[in-house]
View (cartoon, rainbow, N blue to C red):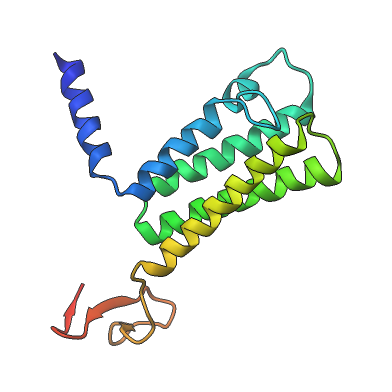
Length: 165
């Protein structure tokens, strides 16, 4: 029975996440656990001591890092999730574009590579649009506590109630 209780708690936590976080969590796990155009499954490639190619292990580390950036962004607030996840997609698109079209080192058809790069670029744009729409800490309502240094964290006040949030 403890397994089902744990599973229910994880399921409830997952269902409470916003759509952006669910997408980033899923894509981050896919990046870390499944093959991609640059390398075999990154987590398994990094842990494989028998594989001698340092070049392929480097790409595995890169995709593992991007996947973990997406997983980390899934548990952040929505604006940070969009910026951090978007950055991971942007770097993946740049890396695949340079390796595939400039160095011609990815043995995949151009159509397959272009669709993967297009997907990463579209996700970057979608996440940046979501971040732009989400409320952020604007400079008009952000202020320092009286007597603090300018490098101290800002506090956000609600102008209607003058309550520090």
